Image (cartoon, rainbow, N blue to C red; front, side, top):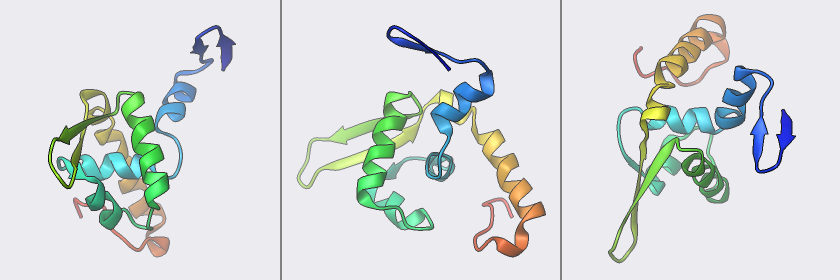
Amino acid sequence: MIDTPGKYKYNWPIEATMDIIGGKWKPLLIYQLKEGTLRFSEFLSKVKPKITQRMLTKILREMESDGLITRKVYAQVPPKVEYSLTEKAESLIPILDQLCEWGSEHMADDIEFKCEEE
């Protein structure tokens, strides 16, 4: 990536994509949101292996900043916050489905959980 004042210029499209959705957690969080809105505590119970609260907070903030999720805060006590996919992130679902299928086909012996379609 070439650094220009205030903006990154990537050399390749895949480099830009991996910068936004790369890492251990982002694809898993997007995949969990494909069925609809989730609250913070629901992420903690759904994402296997377990993600820490601190890491989840960090990744959700990054994803919101990158335009992958929307965050809706309800004015109530205790606070209620819901997360949903944006259209930008929804366009990644077919790709994540293919990655899940690939893992099922080629690494089935090493996988504890199944893709949701199976």
